[in-house]
Image (cartoon, rainbow, N blue to C red; front, side, top):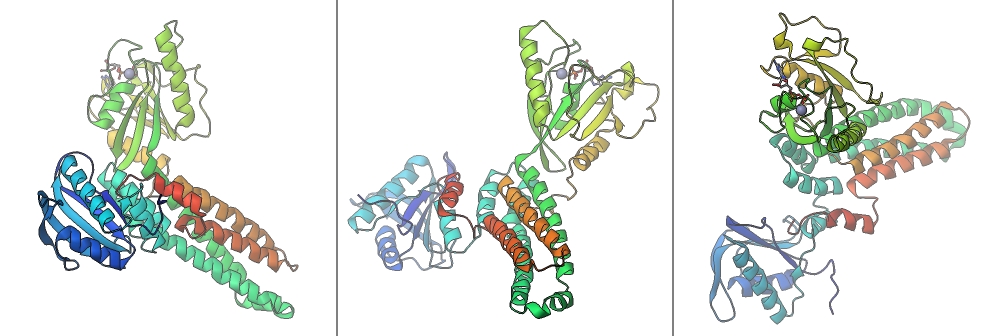
Length: 457
Ligand code: GDP
Ligand code: ZN
């Protein structure tokens, strides 16, 4: 039996399951000779590279399977960096599966070990052939998964290398300083003077600064990917569901004048200025004998623990002095915005203290200010056009990098001869960055990352 190998030619349906005008079957062949043999047999003649070639695919009995366009890309100028054939046929699952089935049978006849691609295998090959680094490969999946045009833009920025370039620029600076230190190690008698001339401390300060900025941008990028969890808390009937509806711009939660209607938390995904958010409407928080409502309240507490931001809602007609509620222990570390709702019922909008926003879920007053405040509180400083998408994995690696830079900084402050330790910390910081671009990741971890892709990517 033939074990799956990186060197096998692979095939997959590249378009999403379902019906569409066009469906694409993609092939990638490491070997140019079997690629040519296969394409000649499959297409009836060898299509010219990068030229749309209309053809009718036929099975062994010369019955037509589909009619479509063949596009051929010779290595290395292709998505995977290998020899790639794309067949654009009619977008139905039976047709496309027929095309793939015929291709596999034809390859068997030609003694070519063509097989179905594993999830993410096309992108994995692009990575292995240096077409993309790992952060860019991950951005392929994130771009496809993006739920708004702003998130798509952020993912596209990562795919085009905006994030990777910054990681590499930081890595280069670290390497530069490390080489300087290591060169100095060979000439201990001139050590101090040499380092002062090269301003080693200044270089390290610049590196720390660049690291801090990159970490902040990556943390923002993670929020772009995962969505921020915002929890609405407040007494029953203050207008939590109404506010959620007003922000979402549609009727999703049940609004009712009877206290305690919202029995379960209701999650709603929405975008504020293009930033994806998950808004959680909470069960009316109060002591209750009602079993169903109690379960809702328990879940609310859990949402509160996971939140990125708390919106505490109060009813303007009840007065601001009204104690929030004594049942909920609010985590103090969380950013909080207090919102005074129903100000439309007051004779005039009150002058409020800092961090209390007057709004009306009913007539929309103050909602734009609330959106600004939400983004500001959770630390989204960039507009989506300037941001890039990142994953928690990247932030974790940047944190490790930062820890080593901090230790390096400690060593740099001391005047005795610990340059070798200083240099070693820089090496470790550099390795941590390599995990982001995939330079320093073991194969099994790489495999795991790509296996989470869909088939055909
Ligand atoms: P929740 O229990 O906190 O989710 O509150 P709801 O959203 O269900 O609202 C309770 C009642 O207050 C409903 O009758 C809403 O129409 C009303 N309400 C909510 N927001 C406003 C507002 O800004 N102005 C006015 N006048 N009424 C509101
Ligand atoms: Zn409600």
